[in-house]
Length: 443
Image (cartoon, rainbow, N blue to C red; front, side, top):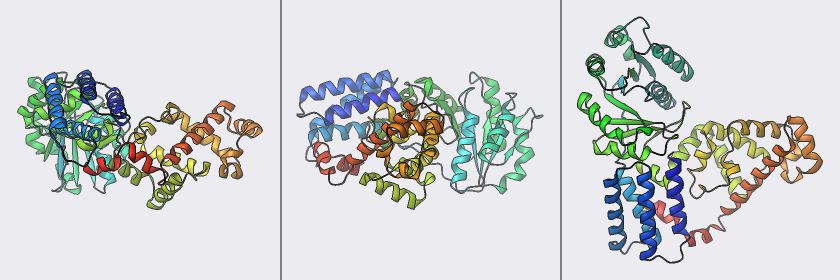
């Protein structure tokens, strides 16, 4: 998410962690870097200046906390960034059915987002159905059908009907069978009179408990105007921001929403159906600063591993005793959790892993699985055996070049080295340089 901004902010934190002395020069230099990074991410200039002044004021005035000066500086940055992103919002499912209407301009990703929300709530035990209300775009109903089948939820569409409010009337007797009905409305290139009338007609007939504006992160500060227009039209109070993975301008969309009084419900972190996350400003900022996001990581892990698997894998990892067998099992789990780089960024202190490990996804993960399947049980139990002629045999058996077998061994060894850094006996040395535990406790 916001890759460029995340890299810059986490680098700032790492520099602060490595600073021997904290003085006025360090404060000035870091604030200048922060200001430049936020403006380049399309955050409103006035908001950035206000943020910088508030951070500077607090760092100079607040005393007596159980932090070193540099820890206090990082904590203030963290808190003030979270403040400008709003409080976040949770969608409460109270009545049955809870009807949700997605609105937004053309190309914002409403239909895919509808399916993502459906899967999100289905995983949590709710009976969900999709309702196709986009009668303007020819392929919209077919897309709803395909996505509903993909996430395995019922759907209601009418390819012949031209008025979306009539689609609502046709299927409303079915709605009480479900906990949540998600209506996907049409979009246009602009909020013209035709779209305004259509949305009002849908809202009058559908009577949603929540109307949610879907906006792409790459529109930057233009999000502010969209949020304002839709708020005036249908009293929008909630926003979902899509395409957070593909832009450096998302700071504008994130901060602009707060200025209109709208709260962000979810953020779309990729194109896959699973890549939707509840927006929690504090967790989000923690991740941006390279401090990880343990809560989101645990939620992902709960869906990918059984409790016993997670405990066993964690124990072996922390003890540095895991084998290729454990590595293979964890590859399977990581595939369920999502993009490896995104998962790693949720773990405090691991934002700066070698590129070889961060690129461990997609085709590369599939090749690694083939390689592991070509090893003997003895090799899987003892990775040190995989050298020389054994590499040649494994490469031949898995149908990959020998270099790719060596790359797997290298990645595994890098992971082994990282696990040793987390040896509880060595953690005191890390905490001495930067009390991450204490900082996270305050969050």
